[in-house]
Length: 72
Image (tube, rainbow, N blue to C red; front, side, top):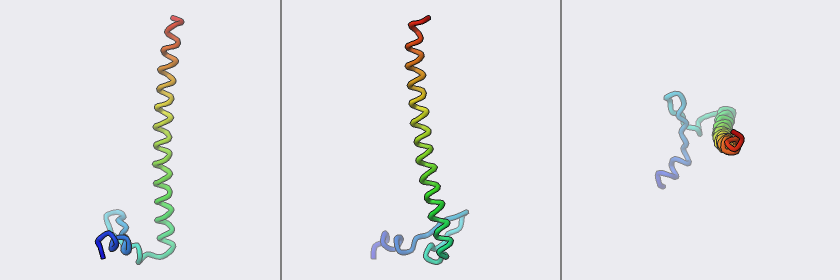
């Protein structure tokens, strides 16, 4: 068995400096971990969305600045 297969069969959670064998945890605890993983994924997605919106806003601001130069 390769090391990668061993890691998949025995996943380890590192939390607050301690390591836990995920297979030894209760179903309720595993569900909490899944919830945290989903929350992290959603946060990353919204952070990326925020960055894109910010870039778009900056681009529109620059376009407006250029257009208003004609009125000075």
